[in-house]
Image (tube, rainbow, N blue to C red):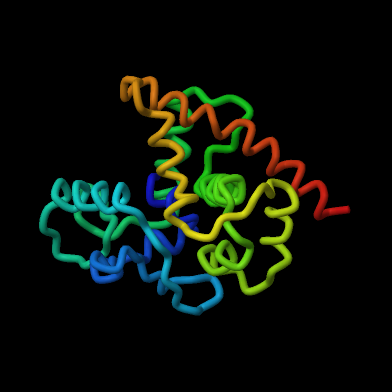
Length: 194
């Protein structure tokens, strides 16, 4: 879930990741399974790298080179990932929020714009071929624009919120933060359909 939030990648892109796609030294993840069929590089920050290293250590050695695997050591499917996200949403007792993989993508875009991401940076990271969707995010959530991912990393925003709280409270609060974002997302879709 952290990877979806940190990078804004699609569910299909995340299940297509391999260990070789993580460029540790460059702080990048190579997205090969993109909707646009174009390979792209997405930045990650040190917090995300640490979490990926922990995950890989816990996961251990498996026969596949897929990054995310099931308990049977086979690559996780898109449907399995979606089911897991929905399950976590139910366990967190979220009401009025569609707890799906794509919500993390919209949350990523909203937090990035609010933290000052520029429109071209957002387009590159999200992998949009058209500027139209990205412009909508900027029009909805735009504030003063800064110029580096390091400054608008969603995980850094959440890390600031986490300081001083227990892990349980942090988990609960960050699931609750999705509710207003989905509300904004609903308005976004309403504006497009008109």
